[in-house]
Each structure stands twice: as structure tokens, then as C-alpha cells.
Image 1: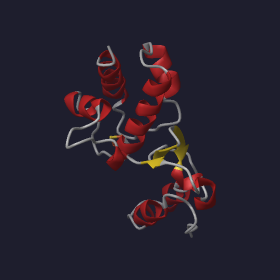
Image 2: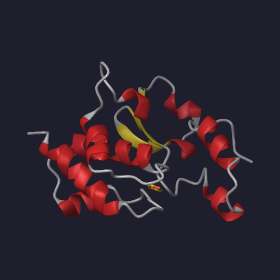
Image 3: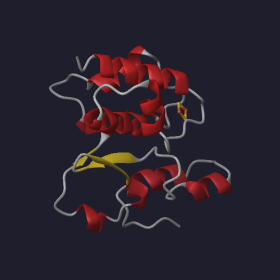
Image 4: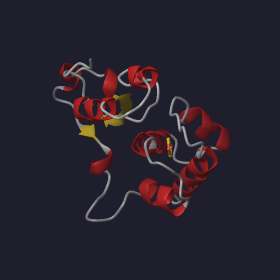
Length: 142
Ligand code: FES
């Protein structure tokens, strides 16, 4: 049973109803995959592990909040340009993690990208394309 007090309540409930093995379902709400990453006052957090009470009065940015005036965020566009996803399960969290990384380090090296994106798991194994997308977004930083 998933608590209704975490930031990702609707997401976790949706995921928990998918026909996945119970061992996978048990990992939801455990902060292990990074798929539910959002920004809390600009810092990446696992929403499944974040009590609603700790977000009170803070700015929450979700994947939906990145687009501005109908234009995708450069990281979103880079993920599309590089086809940096397969099933898309991990993609929102990956993008939010990349946005946070590029905010703190606008021109990361490949090693810094790999380190910065640690903890984000892609079961489809699109890591090379994800790194390419983050590099492309970084190059757009000037
Ligand atoms: S694209 Fe499927 S888990 Fe990452």
C-alpha cells in the first residue's frame, strides 16, 4: 500500500496498478529509479519519498512546468532530437535530473553527466542517447 502523503501519490498509484511483478511494484515509492524526480525550489528530489508537508511553501517544478510559451525546454527538445527514450517510463525523471544538473553545471563533461545522472535508471538501456541529449542541451547553453 502506498501512502497518500507523498508528492507522487497519483503517479505511484497509477504505476502500482500496472501488471508488474510484485518485486518491481514494491520498489515504487522507494526512491530507487528516479522516474518521479521533480524540482523542489530548483533541487531534484524523489517525489515518492518526499512528504507533502516538506514541500509546503516551496516551488515545485514538474516535467509539465518546463515548457514555456508553447516551446519545449532545451533539455526536452534534446531528448526528442536524440530519441533518448524507448518506453519513456524514466524520461520525465531523466529530464528533470538533467535540468538540475545543467543548472548547477551548465557545461558538464561526459563523466560529470554520468555522475550527475547516477540514480536515474533506464530499464530500456538508452543511456548513450541520454548522455548525448544532455550534451546537446549543454552545448545550447553557449
Ligand atoms: S526509456 Fe524505458 S525505462 Fe528508460
